[in-house]
Image (cartoon, rainbow, N blue to C red; front, side, top):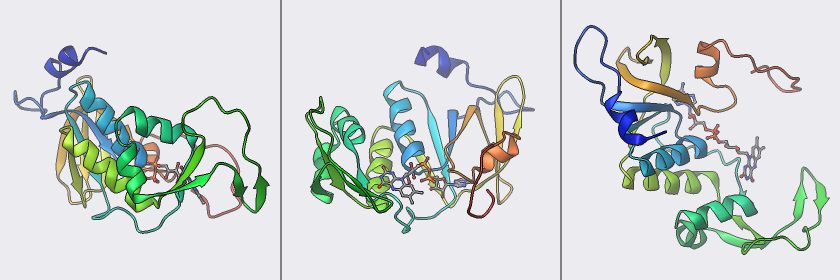
Amino acid sequence: MHSRQFTTEASAVPGTDRPSLFDVIIAGCGPTGAMLAAELRLHDVRVLVLEKDTEPTSFARIVGLHVRSIELMAMRGLLERVRERGRQRPAGGFFAAIDKPAPEGLDTAHAYLLGIPQPVIVGLLEEHAIALGARVRRGAAVAGVTQDEEGVTVELADGERVRARYLVGCDGGRSTVRKLLGVGFPGESRGPRR
Ligand SMILES: Cc1cc2nc3c(=O)[nH]c(=O)nc-3n(C[C@H](O)[C@H](O)[C@H](O)COP(=O)(O)OP(=O)(O)OC[C@H]3O[C@@H](n4cnc5c(N)ncnc54)[C@H](O)[C@@H]3O)c2cc1C
């Protein structure tokens, strides 16, 4: 993808010759959406992130970063900031009450875990994306999507419409975008149905 070409091809708002302000709308500002927004900004893509929650979730599923995630933080110059807010632990430990011995001979400069709660890592990634020029709107829930040949119109829960060339669903396991597009999520779950 060449970013310049991408930007000049941004779709018009339907019924007008007004160009849309964004190339890509990302639904969801969890770790995936925030990181994707930052990566797209590195390619000069104009990004709007729509997040339904007004604050990063206080419910922490992520309690630590694993080796590959730590490597990626280092590659993007974020590791010091993550380390300041996290706690270094030996690799290994346990998962779901099962002992998980530390792997030996890992080919990495970061053979450890970093304990850091999800709201903190999401906050850091969101700040990083904004610093690179992404626009993040919190309290903006994606509720509807229509596509045409030029792009996509996203309807928010309050009825506002925003337009871009592409929409990326980073809105989690119960993804509204996935459901709106009729994309299945086959598999079995012992918990509540998604
Ligand atoms: C029990 C458990 C423990 C875990 N522990 C770890 C761990 O220790 N370390 C680790 O790295 N990973 C861990 N994971 C995995 C980790 O939680 C996920 O990989 C990560 O949260 C996925 O991020 P995401 O951004 O794709 O989705 P999510 O974190 O689910 O974020 C989705 C975002 O989209 C928003 N959203 C939803 N619907 C809409 C909408 N309609 N419009 C706008 N926004 C919307 C949500 O508010 C949310 O902010 C764990 C997962 C589970 C279930």
